Length: 153
Image (cartoon, rainbow, N blue to C red; front, side):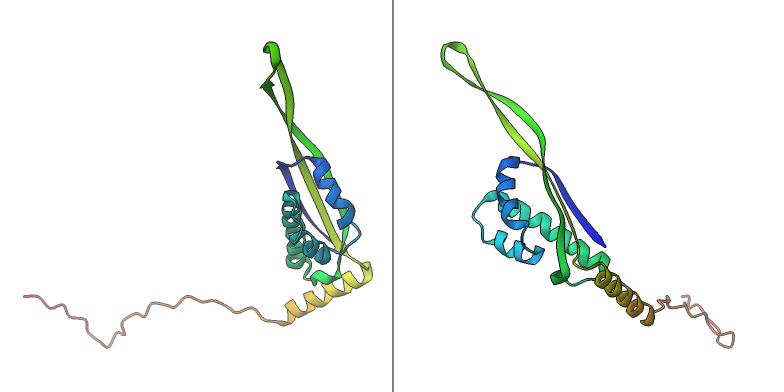
């Protein structure tokens, strides 16, 4: 039982994001979000949003409380790099690169057996709750006993 979230082309270098991953991998997703929310780094807000998206996906699809989740995969890959140049001395060009990253997060349940049991319970609860039938109101036809007369002048 897993839920995924990923972001591509994040304008932050992979090195800056991987520094945060070392701390976050040891935590649960809920604790990691609390930790990242108060971090002053720009890349912390980006990583927070991706983890929150994965947790919300797990809540919606698996019907599981966020405290029962753990990280299955936290990965930061190198994206493309824009090559740019600054003017240098004696007409030379000084190159530099603007790097991008790809972030992937997969969260799942701590125990496979517990996760399966929780999903089965959620399915049973859904099955027992009857869905409301929505019917459109039928237009009332005039009864044959009443005569409809048009008033003309």
